[in-house]
Image (tube, rainbow, N blue to C red; front, side, top):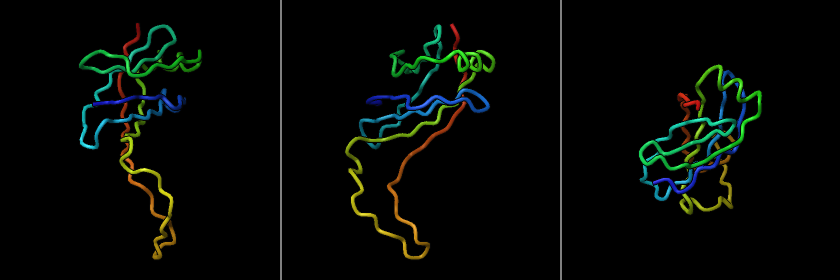
Length: 117
């Protein structure tokens, strides 16, 4: 199950693009099915099964115009689990290519239709 959803950034690329941080309760949780809607200038992400609001953000006039034109939005989702990795305190370099190791992150990118009311 989803613990919290946070909209971190709203951009205009080809369409309206939203960066979303999704915090899950457990590493084996797969239950994130968003539905997108816009009422007035308030953009909402809700759970498609229960209808619960997960996150909202106010859109500017320019962002709202792009959303009304395309009627789709691009979600760039970063999945995270609280306490799973902790903090990376010591960076161990990979000798072969001189780069440091990073923690694994799960990212997801999708374009979904938006219900305009």
